[in-house]
Image (tube, rainbow, N blue to C red; front, side):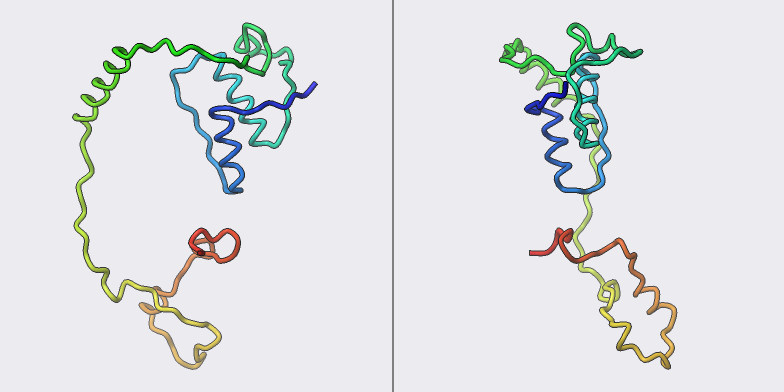
Length: 158
């Protein structure tokens, strides 16, 4: 029996990003219990494939990862935050200390863009076919078909 679930956390994020109808590369992190990771990726894979999944997990080689109740839906409810303020402060200090040792990217000085950098606008229909265009000018006119686009998917349109 399939169930409708109110998605939370990762799954809600995947559902939201999927609405943009853009190619997605979905990757995982770490530090979670394997039981919750198995459920999370199963639910998110279902979202990515537009497939409603049953709550009951069928018998398979990985069923142990869905313990203790062997169902897909994670029990809801309020989960008490067991992190103390001193523990959070300690983690914050450790993170800031680690960040001190990360090499930063060198800064880049702002400069004017050279005038010959810009690709000139041209209309192929208006070009004279009897006039030869030198190689350098042709190289400046090269534009990948998927580089720029107009229409509904144009994020730069106002």
